[in-house]
Length: 105
Image 1: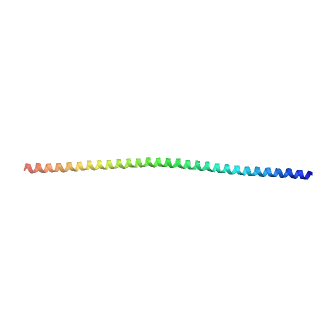
Image 2: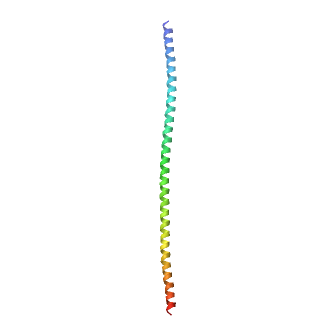
Image 3: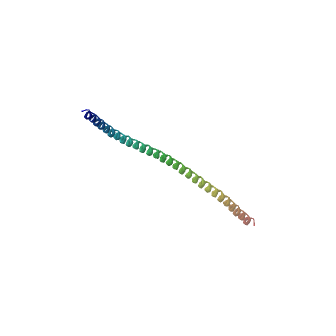
């Protein structure tokens, strides 16, 4: 009878250990899935932050480029205007001299 009692105890122990093994495996799967979801959320959050930062940098660079182009255009127009005024003054002076010379004769 003693061996039968030992066998029954061993059998119950094995059953309990199998149940514990299944429980632990299930809990480990749940934990792994949870960790994976958290990792994906963290990763997507970091990517989103990087993209926002890059977008802000791009907007700032575009604004700086537009300002530089605008400034360069204004400077070119101003230089051309000043040059044309000098040429116009020279032409007007020449015309005035021509009128003066023709009027003096």
